[in-house]
Length: 326
Image 1 (cartoon, rainbow, N blue to C red):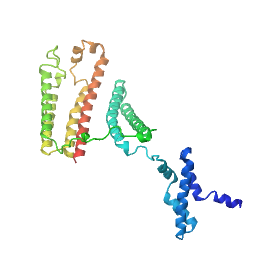
Image 2 (image 1 turned 90 degrees about the horizontal axis):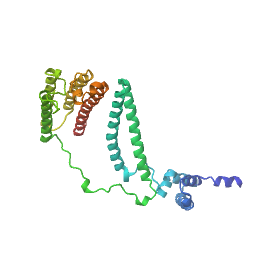
Image 3 (image 1 turned 30 degrees about the vertical axis):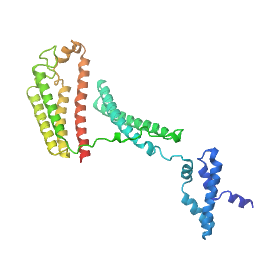
Image 4 (image 1 turned 90 degrees about the vertical axis):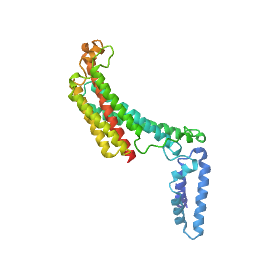
């Protein structure tokens, strides 16, 4: 008799109900256990009445009910996901925005700081990559954690999206190609840049120092002439993109080649001290650059990052536009 009692206390139904109740709050555990047990017994009896053996019927009923913890979560309304559909889109939009802002900013800051402290190229690249991975991990983790806490807020009945969607939030349709205005804007920008280069050489960019050029006068005519040729190619590319009604992968590669053809020589000249007029910083800073050689070096590093940043942004932006179009 004792062995029979022990066996009946550990039936599959008992084990299932016990497993399901482990994640249920103590206050509602008794009523829910009774309700679940009655439901299981009713389903078993129905199968037995149709001719199945009781042990086979019991196993089949419990198998159909599935994981007991999942069943308990459905009974108690406990979500089995980190972020549900109520907040998922807001989480995704905010995460993308933060990653687009934080990662480039952190990468630029770390690379600039390591450059100014005299780190070699390997240390700059390695430190920047490690920092970017760490920053991305923290952004994803803490953003997700905040939304998980919100998703499991104490007042479940009052949970709503942070912003209620309205038709006013509908975005404008994206243009399928590059419009005439885009081409004109590119041509105007190139024309202004060419005019600024000529103005810098002839008149100078500092009103108090007439004739003081920012770029090294020794770059004329060959280096600056080569830059004008690349700018003309950029203008022709803008026209071709307009005629093709958008970017193609071939045109995107051509744009990348032109951008690198401008940036790489500029960075090499800057590193050799040949890009910027050596008289410019001492004249503008009142001799401070001459008395403090580190100042000119710091300014050169900053300009180098600006040149590289513009090239990377231009190449990346065009490839993203090409991907979206194609």
